Image 1 (cartoon, rainbow, N blue to C red):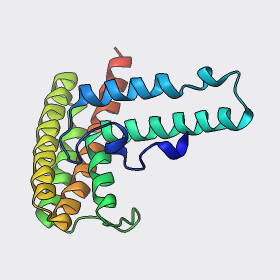
Image 2 (image 1 turned 180 degrees about the vertical axis):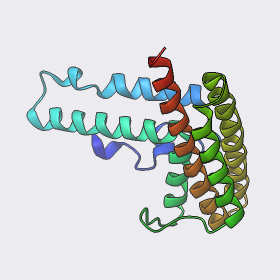
Image 3 (image 1 turned 180 degrees about the horizontal axis):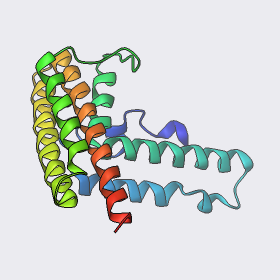
Length: 179
């Protein structure tokens, strides 16, 4: 059962190996596989088959979650291409980019004191999402041209924007809860 499944997550869901994916096709394929291998279907099966169904379900969930999220999908692609990561040490040394991150962080912190903090945070989040989408497009171009080190640098920058968005979202929720 488990040995019959492709090891490559794109092949698992019948998708081409590329950064831009059809989210609808991914979800449809995921649901079909979930239905086929759901542990409830193996309630009367042997203990080994039950364990395999659980393992497959876990694998499907991890694969779906990874391919659904652009940054995780980008990392998976690079890892499949042989690019390694050290999460403790890998970062960008682009000083202009890092200065921009400091400015974004300060703007998020100052937004809470603005006359309209919710609106200010929402506007900042729109700007951050725009920047993140631009980086995703840059990653796609680097991936297509097989400039993997550029793609890795772009991926590392994407994580900075995700953290900024998480911070802004957290502050927004805290302000909304205080209303």
